[in-house]
Length: 185
Image (tube, rainbow, N blue to C red; front, top):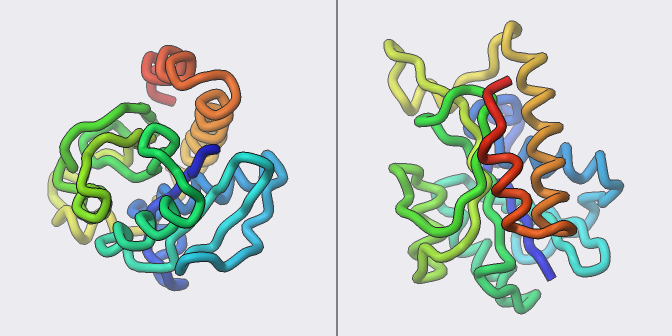
């Protein structure tokens, strides 16, 4: 059993923002592998297919920990069966990295999950959104993608979906070996 959980902010005004990269990746995975997000469970929008649950917490990013904990308890998910997808400003736009454990890196959504689970021991699929050197970080993560980033965004989401599929169906180590080495788009 695996739980793939993408972080983002609820609400129409956040749909196309950089901070919603986790939501966007779950949407792409859902579409690509025909797992409809058609259930409301534990304050989340959820899709279930056999031993795989994909979810988007219906909360704001920074308070998603309680929802992730509820989902993990509901489906009896061990931390090694949990992968959280989130944006990462410290990685170049378009890069992805799968990692086990670690600090929150200043990401409040990840911090909320660490606090709720009382452990940092879970997998993360980090998707690089880069940084704008002149824009305030909060303003930047809540900004929409630029038109010139659209093609790379779609390719990044396709790669993230492939990485998640490999992680679940072919093994965590294989996914990390392949996708952590992949160069920027």
